[in-house]
Image (cartoon, rainbow, N blue to C red; front, side, top):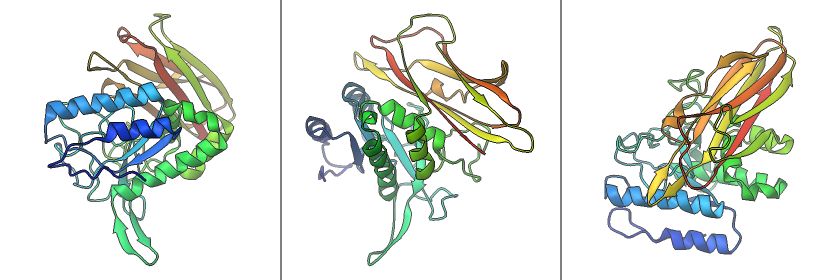
Length: 321
């Protein structure tokens, strides 16, 4: 365990050398419960966010961070929680279906991002320790699940984008989510509640396609993948499809290409993606399928590609009855 001994309101954060130490010692997933609020120094925080994105992109480190415990406030979430390439975790109550009152979920207007990525239970009764709560209790649940996945499939250590995509596709939508079964992603719950069983199951069956894109070919779709299914009105299937990619930083500025995720059944368009990639690096579709045939997942770029390096992306699907 590494402690930054950091006071977010008075101190100077020296966390990147610590993260480099982890990389140098072959650590693949790191849990972090520190951060600098956006309200401290906006230009410095923005630079810090870019530094986290670049560090993850360069070192393929999976960095899981707590969203914070100051409740909804547009000036609280900052670095590293707002970085596109980190996995930001909010918290629910012990029931798992209501966002905890303290869980930070609103990003600064100046840097719109869909954060947190997902939520986990943050209120716990701990034997011999009483009752505790916080996003710092929720984030390690996600980190632990990732560690289990890496233990089973060591190659996951090289693909943070795949971890992000599987987490998104296997999380459970929350009934109290204001966008329940509509937009599927929002800045309160992200993709929903962590489901460790579904997450590990998806890792084992490997329902993920990896792809790199650098503007060639410049025609859509840039990625297409087909999956045969058997379903009916009496025996429907529940489908979640997630797309995540690692963003880059060029000359100190974030490079975020806009991709759309589309789902077809027997060549009929069922739905577009969430449109969330306008502000971030994730897309999510949830559908109920009531007829058999061939599903086709398409990834399309909106506008021109920008950046000096290829976007590293992962497309994950999860189907259950």
